[in-house]
Image 1: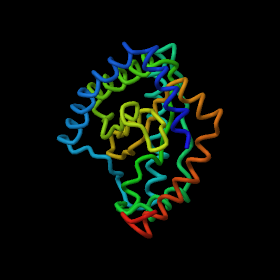
Image 2: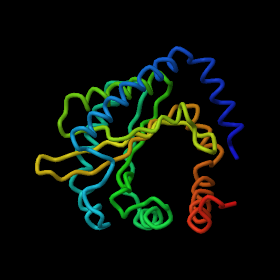
Image 3: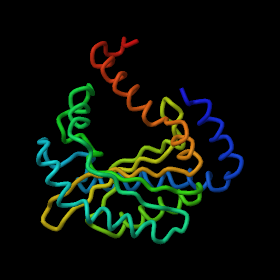
Image 4: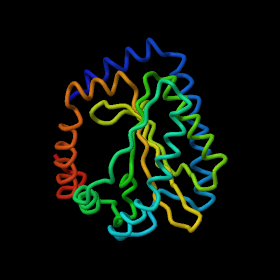
Length: 219
């Protein structure tokens, strides 16, 4: 487990960026309100179709708009970079569809299109969050439908970031729910150095298979 390493790094962030971390926490309510407004308007973290091919077609139609929006976000923040990822590979989406007990077809796969913001500091993380909130408040084709604030509640391995699901729509009604990951510089450097992501992928698949086979009694 990399929990001790990630934990030590986070302690350093808490000491060095205490003001920015408080700013981050203060924004949580704004995101809850934005997600609630999306839900009230009928926008949920669910894809348009349960068919895998439809998911790829919706990605093809919407990914350029998603990329343009996120390029605009980081363009205002000197300490942030945007890296759009490729469409999620079919085999991983099939894994998620069949290995997760609560999965209901491919419509629940909300990271078929994704990208990462590399933010140097926690204040840069906050600036990115602010820009995303501002777009969601003014653009009728851009909705925040879910957020996981893992800077406050880390993963089981100790990893911390933001995962924001954004529904990007076109005027003709076609849409896709994308995932934006906002990673802080020190945490991301540690993950790359330790090769933590590759190890996470293997342990995640094993964990999913155990839960599928044994449920709550999985070892």
